[in-house]
Image (cartoon, rainbow, N blue to C red):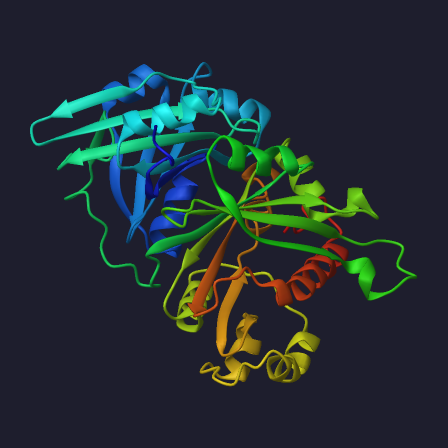
Length: 386
């Protein structure tokens, strides 16, 4: 009996959108990803959707858009705005992963599918999750399998060029749900993940006379073998309905993936270059940076290399302790960035880690306060959602 899923790492994630050309501009022009594959004509005919794969380092995002109303993408978009429909993970042994999940009560959505070619094989299956219409896929790539997936054709040589912003790997994935424990317990009981980190925070802590507020509870679960991490958030009372987590679920029309974090070596030049490409980021209040030197002193961070004025200018957040720190920033969600509620409330995070492996506990207040400020300043229905 195997004792783990045998996950090697993230393989890819599948984004369903109404407007593939807008996504192509976002990934290829703004984020500097390379288009590495496209769905073949036969796959488009069979599945009723067009699809492209964009890559940077080890990151692969499959973006698909329906061209027939009976396609899976069309069914997803009848319920949700643009969003992630599937997360895929690389495993060492697909049969061992299947046996492990079967023994723990997973709900399988397919049998193991195999595509064998000279020199390699692609084996996969997928399962249901507590995240509504988001599924998990497991993939074994044996030998030198030459394509992204069956019925996909390479663009160029199928490999991404070096990303100009330094995007190379996924740090973590965060999902939102109205209630968190069914998701967290599923990670533990079905996937075999273990508790890694948790936090509670509410803006009501900042004063007792507040008439509104926003809060969350968050638990991070991790695969013990690969270190793959999932954070799950739920809204927190009081003002449950005002919580950004609740509002994500309302805007997404259910639980789902809120954001994915990309790891970079140098966040300041990445953020500055991305701004030059039109990417907008969540602002942090000026008071955060006024208090930052004292907070760093309190948590014993004496080795911060990045200039304070550059962090303030770019709204980059700092957290950590004992001379281990991390830098993070959040893009605006798609519906705010595009001014289109059909673009959905998903967003990306960028992280630079200098020894700290946490999730920015000390930054939650600044993050929530800045989101609330943005929401108050936006009189339209397309409010910023974190």
